[in-house]
Image (cartoon, rainbow, N blue to C red):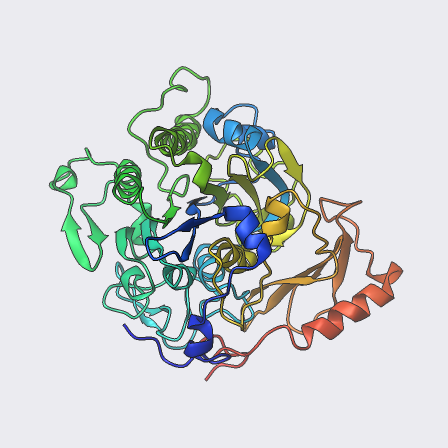
Length: 467
């Protein structure tokens, strides 16, 4: 589908590719074509995202009971971030931020359901699902301008069937999975979407449960990599684990643990996902494209506490999914790129999903849209010093009960209701957000209040007052 004029920049401007500077040539190198021209060697990009995985659910982030050896090894071979943030505290808006590079005060989809407009839900039929529109430019479209083949498998959440928001109408060449988050709770569903076609899973019809969708997504991802190993590719793998329903084909290696059954299943789900992250990394090595592939792993928001058991899923953080406290929006983030991202590095650089668009665009040496809120963190990934302490990061839970959060340096401000007072927390001293220091730092509060006056635009789908 042809994109129409973007609200803040022309499509011609967007399509104009960035030229390779000396830094890009030094980073990637160039190869000569038969006619003597230079061709940019762009890296493959794999972006893996769990669903409702908590900050403390991985061994490399302090988890003691659930085994995640492959992601832990990925961290030892790459960079682990201690202060990376999702786009939102719940599913759909977080993914919208990731895809568009716009924070929740600007991105199209600001909550799982809109108050005004929207389309019918794929499962319930109730209106309120808001799809991406043709003028929304996604990271997949940006990368296609650089010659990437683009694929996605897992959970989309940004457009129901027959809408403008489905992946194949938003820059993805190949797609397999759930369009709708209500559908995504069924790990043994009897159908999935492949490109724009509904595909029946015969192994799950008539009450059978023999095709676990997570496993199907992994096979699709592996096949995509094999098929496109000779071309630059972008593979987005938004897994549904460990989002409820809590179910898995086997509770190994936790079958004999003295935990409630639900806890054994939850742990087994995460370890199964870790196994498959390992399979993806191993395939990259087998195909000898490991050194030219950057792999990201993260979660879409904080823990939902789905196990009903104390796995310390939020780690040292307060709150969880749905909350603008740290436990609701801070995500594990591990990045691996042999020979480029320094191995065994722990970074406290603060960044969030809005930064993914410009970062991947810089990796591909192509210009992102001008109306994004993120900045490229590629220098940080390459082990270079990058000072981002003076920029603002923004989150909201939209009107009518507008809640807002802002990060500025070590300070985090939260507003719990429209026009309510700002609370201020110094995360360097108070990670659990227990001590409101707004009265001690009136200058900081004033600076953040000034930023908030222009931080967001009104959305017709989430108006402050009811239509």
